[in-house]
Length: 344
Length: 250
Image (tube, rainbow over all chains, first blue to last red; front, side, top):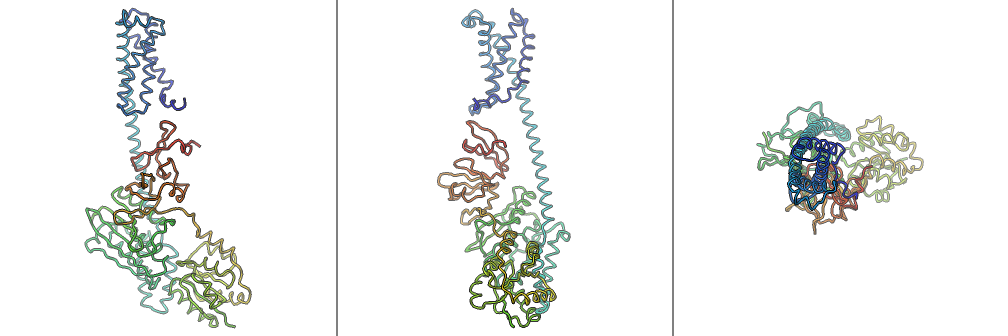
């Protein structure tokens, strides 16, 4: 029983009352056509009305793929009118066999009226349902738009909160502290790289618009610092064609990938590692890749919040026309690529 | 009398820095060995039997905490770390000394003085402290599958599991569906189920595992089944009767 209850979904008290009222009105409208009393005709109308209502509800809920839902509902009303009229005969204790002989005309009129009224009501209901569906669709689109706006705001917030790691800052300063005494020239170089990195990385210092060239310069400063700190263990190359440097590129994403390449790639493996940044434009897409020859991903270790942030920001900024792709590097390591629509 | 020490830090300049400063502040202390990470503590102890280890906490391979665990009370340990609020908090309980990088001579001198007093005594066992620190630093995270490796053409694509909407077995293969791509892998649903985080990935059908973070809505279907609509995806998924209890109202 429980299984079939959903077929009656929408059969509310309100619906039953409406059908009753409409039957009463319909009876009053057509009473002049018949010799019957008002009550007699009203009973017939109710039988037709309730049967049609029941079948209409079921037709609306049943899952079938033979015909559109609306067609099934119209059919339900037609069948309901025929069955309802016969049912009315039973209710009033008439001889059913007579209904198709001497009283055929009356029965036919009754059925026809049922079908006519039924169809009008069905049409009204279908229109109402369509209206409700449209409303729901509009509401959904609206909420999606709100969600998107929220995403964009969140992405901006995340960008603002992208912090310079204290661990990185203090370790770098510890290196500078040593170099000042032992190798002043290198100390100056590391400090200059640090300043350049901080200018781009500190939210208060960040400028609104940026391009691939500027992001690459920042990544270079970051890599220079790490090369000094990690000694012979890190090497890097930046291969960005001159004409792509002026391309628009979202801020802080490239540096995030480079950070990941060092933190999860080169640093965990004790030997030497190389980080290569490259960029190419193809079919209107700008693809910027960071490849490392490090450890590669461990299946059970996550990529950190950095990658999730990039994905969310790309989605907020470009929808489905941008993506972050992670691939294995050969013979080892990871290639992380960001693809965005190419605009200058 | 002269004591011996070992320095472990992955950054060569920082090892050199500590070495030269110690030479100035504590000339009698002999640095007998330097390490790039905590690997091979046992061999170092066997060879040099140092009184003291200076350990950086964050090092690739074997980190400072793991090294301290391996030293296990055979030598004294001083942690040298750049920034770690948890570590600092724990050390303030006074179990061992710690030095924050970058440090000045005064601070290092304080450590040296403390050490001179303590080196006469037995090295304390630090098991409890190290365990506590390891817990706070989140060294041991839950071991669940985080990446799906899938061949795409000649490349191997790495897909973070958070991006996966659902896994569905498809005869010999398993479909891995994300918002913007679909790949096939060989790992069967059953194996995936054992490895994925059960809080995020629910089996909803003999052949389907869904990422609950991507479910938009669940609708009652025919024959006690249910139907799942996903965010950012057109396909709907069937929840078979055996799994509909997962979505019953609380």
